[in-house]
Length: 348
Image 1 (cartoon, rainbow, N blue to C red):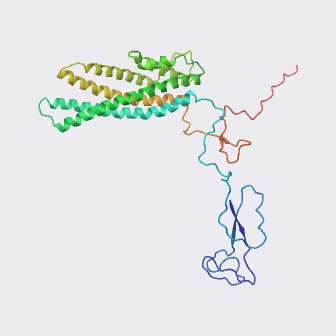
Image 2: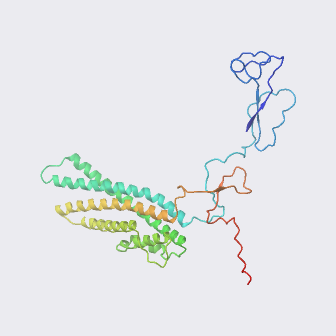
Image 3: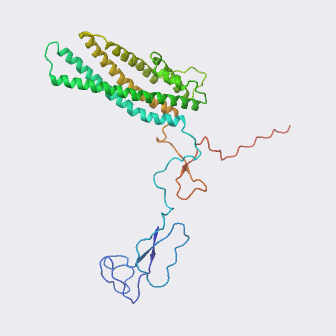
């Protein structure tokens, strides 16, 4: 920090120095300010001092030293404000990542992939609908090679990109549901009785995956809401809508896959219609999956970056320049008021 050391202005019979602004020389006894431009005529001697000193250092006696440039430090100064914004304190004794941390991280990776699945499924549905329109036109008129080429390209892109997005979203969804289920069990104070193999099999085994994912997410939601473990889980409306779309999406995808083995012109046209519905329902299901992932993750723990009230306190004995830390919530802070003493029974 630099502080100016004032040198008293030259007053009296001596001629003051010329004004640094206008260059004129004020007459003797005109005061500390230039009578023409009002500039302060006293010179300023800037001295660099370390914060925390009680008083300014005394000026060195002797002649005027030659200017040797700005102050230099042998090492980077350790005083000053910390670099970067305020951050949530991390205890040095923390162990491995908790299930809620893994679930939140996986949700952050899953939601963008689901949005990609929504887009490519919608493109695939539009491409299949265009192909069906070309089939209707081909019954009476010849088709344009350009239109047929664009239709085939869109169908190829929508089909393969949706397959890749489904695989990526499926892996992330299974991983997220696994850690969200464990985080919900930790939050409610119960033991997660479903094993990892059971959860993975419930998502991928045909037939079983119609009911197992819905029941798993219903139990996760039940525990995240803090309801009694003895009660039977009652899925919310958001989860029931997703469950119905999930079943419809699996059934339509299975029927469309089996329909490809049929031959004939009418079977080809019917297969195109099935693909239109399968891709459209897949897009809607992916969108509802985004809402369910956000809903359950938000129930497990609110967003740490969202708006919330924090109490910042200074830690005694902290190193200089350390970032402030957040005080514990009101429920964890001890009550500063001592308990009232119990009244003694009145003498009879």
